[in-house]
Length: 331
Image (cartoon, rainbow, N blue to C red; front, top):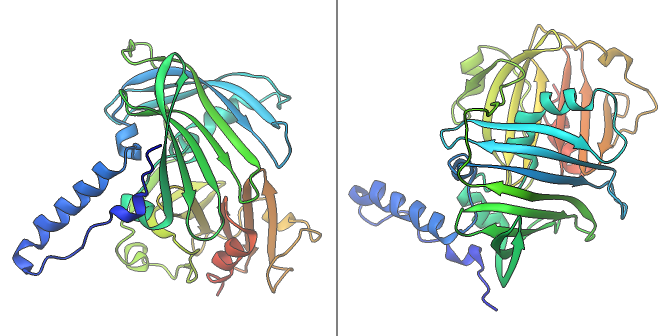
């Protein structure tokens, strides 16, 4: 059995001669990417294919709480489509409508992907199990991905080496409980894209530069987190308007998984419906009257009501970590 510990493949950073820094960094990045056989999110958008997947989502029990089929199509030029087909578990009457609204989010954040190679190398361990399996009629290699710090969650993956696409993923929590399974039932690597329906964003967003000062970009007194979950880094920043309010959206990731911070922008006020938050909701922090939490399957949600509006943290991390993120942004 051939084991690959990706964390051991990191190369030295800066060269001794400053004149070679740019070339050295480019070579280092290329070497790291070659050392990781799994696709990055950018690479997944380049793999032209069309297929049907079965999705099973669990909530701590041995049986899934939601099972459905979806069709995925990738055009290779940044376009993608995700369409719900049929559900095999009880769902609301408007389930298909909801899935379509969340399609862009589901494609980009629900499933496994390497979102940053450096963070992946630091926070996760990759093992090639040296085993072959067949998914959707295609030969795949088996990999194990485990988080090295924090919660000991893991993914079991089946990678189509020829196509470069993950055809099966199973996610487990720190206690070894199955959280989700996404598996291709059929796949066409040379699809007819004329009939493809491409997923569009549900709201208009304005992208910001996450590496620059956000207050300067927006010209506002923003409420920004000061305590970030261990291993996570700010990767995306944007503003959007929905629920009749203007929002700031920040996305942090640890190389694989994402955590979201949302806040209404100054002057927007609290979004409709937040005034009626239940006083019996469990508050994990020191201000239970202001800090409310909920759990949706593997996802924790923490929100704080302030005089100016609403702050929210969303992610598949511990409730305490998420509460720290939100609390650190309180005025």
